[in-house]
Length: 260
Image 1 (cartoon, rainbow, N blue to C red):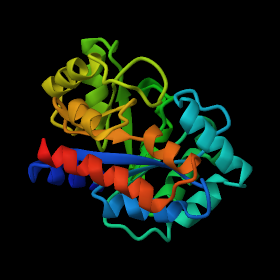
Image 2: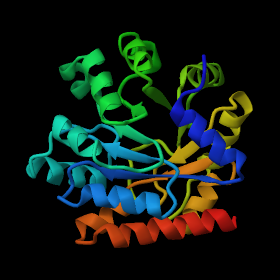
Image 3: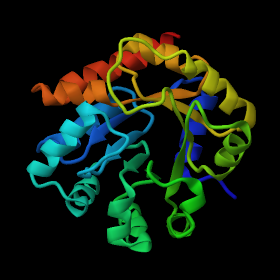
């Protein structure tokens, strides 16, 4: 299967010698949230993950949950968020992160088309194992939406290989068993899983969960192709910060990754 726009863009960044940086933004978190996405890109993001809030997010820790709850209280809806995404004119891929209940309620083909029409290039649906993506995968691939799959530290070798084969865009390595959130150190399992993934796939391997500081970004990316950062960025917004403050942290992560 030919590579899509998301995977191609990340491969190009990797080929240029960059460690990839993918920040997360909760869609609908304040009126200024599209400008936060723009600030992330201006600060050096290689792609941006945009969360579509759901009331029962099984993977999200307290910070992302708080952001989702606040966005929902402000009236955020999947359709409204996607309408706003259409106006975010950036030159890196945008990836939707949400839960299957929203996909199911939209309908697979309608949701995939809605993402594509909004200009998104990928989707992360963490509560659906790849064995159960039979209805979603063809609908997504038909419109060019690349479905990212998650690999955990406890994923056995045979399953890891199959997961990497089915993943599109990149493989999301989960640093630790647990939910998202800010942590003081990078788990030892991060490097182990990254090496296991790199041994079985040439697709970009991006590590996420618990990356909160520039130094942690460097550590998490050491054996992988890049990192995802979310909770630390959303904490800035929840504490009253805005695009400039978020862009500053993304920029410092970018600088640290570039310095190695």
